Image 1: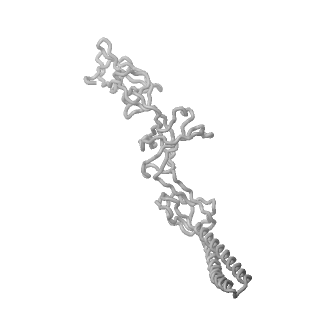
Image 2 (image 1 turned 90 degrees about the vertical axis):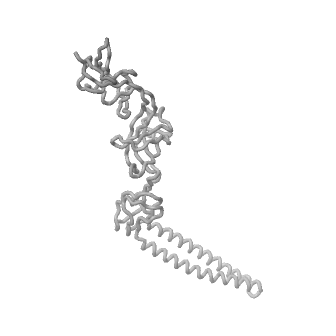
Image 3 (image 1 turned 45 degrees about the horizontal axis):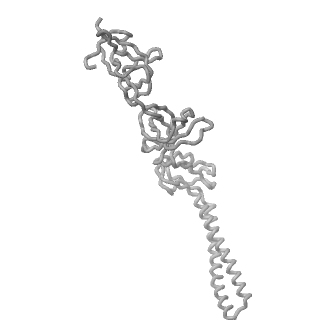
Length: 331
């Protein structure tokens, strides 16, 4: 019986990463939820979700009418106290000269000194009150705490806001980290410097990074260890609170690899056909293998094959165990 022409590939060793895949959450190192420090109705919203803002930029305003009245009153009181303080400053100098000249008594001079001290204290108190009221007035404007991107804005102009109202968020996308929770079973393997591949839901590689933080504690609820890895991808690729796949690479070791096309699955078991030569005749010998991670277009094979085995990579759907085959020249 003439053998079926087939192509073969010799099994070789290639460096294969031993890894585990987890779900990671991208988080910003600087992220703020903005809440008002005063109560009132929103009168202005100057930004939209997704806007890039700079530190100190005005985002929203709360009706400051009552507080502005308090500031105006404090300023008027300060001017009144200042006028009295200025008058007593001149008067104390005049009384000092008269006392030193022996024209007025010590009692009159001390009364002038007392009046000066009182008005000075009143003026300083008025200045402090005015500054406090002005500082309080600043709370009626919501400003960006740092450069970043505005998040969702669930409020509208006219809404009543209190100290518990979440107005919006500002996230700085330039300093991101991947938060990865590793099971405690891996506690002896996880360490600083391990390579991490971040991938999207389709398995596309987004960035290669390394673990730079290892929590000294185990999460009591999850029984997992938090590790972090820096993220340098642009905001168009990775964003704050985005969930991605994270492949933690524990080690790399040489391992037998075969093309994906060579693997056949039957009844939940994986097989390859190895071209076996005996007495000058070639047959396809079905061999059970254990599949490891994929490396490009190949599977790593932890067990089942030896280096140099000729694995059949064509016409595998037509092969059965011990079927005569004819390796093509050069294969």
